[in-house]
Each structure stands twice: as C-alpha cells, then as structure tokens.
Amino acid sequence: MHEWGLVADAIEEIKNHSAKNNITKVIKIQIGLGKKSDVSERVFKTCFKVLAKDTIMEKAKLSFTKKADHIITVDAIQGSSCS
Picture 1: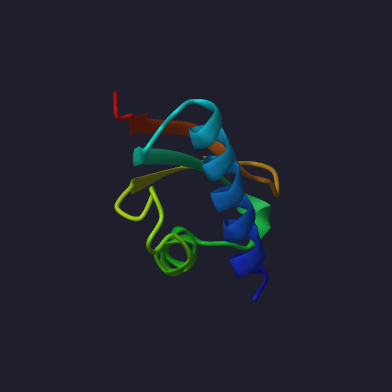
Picture 2: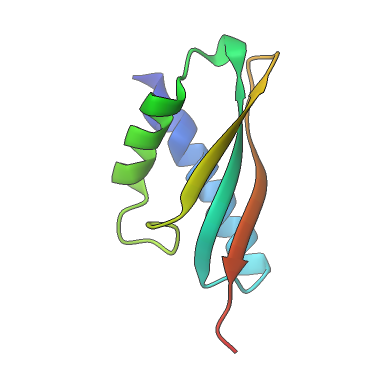
C-alpha cells in the first residue's frame, strides 16, 4: 500500500516543522488530499493513527482539504510548546 509511505512522509514533515518551531505537542493538522492521489481520508486517518503512535502528534486532530491534483500536502500545523 503506497498510502503508508505517503503518510510516513507527511509525519516526517510534521516532525521536522515541529522541531524547528519548538512544538512539543501537535494539536491539529490540516492535510491537503489531491483527488488523484487515490488516498481517502479514512485510509489516511487509519495509517496516521498507527504511524503517529507514541509521537507528539499521536492525539492530533486531522482535517482535510480536497485538491484537484495528485499531491498530498501538510497545509497547517497547530501545536503547543513547553516554556
């Protein structure tokens, strides 16, 4: 299933962004799902739940925006940091 690789790539992007911005807990993630990517919201959520386990984004709420292309993007990340 190519979905696992796509979600793993998105998780890596979220981890990198979080580290650069001192985010210690990811609360919400906006994902852009290309209509031609052949990945449904349900499949993305299922893969994400497994791959994000025991990470700072484990309990993050996912929301999705449909896009016309075939690309999957991380459009926004909301998080908090410890001071």
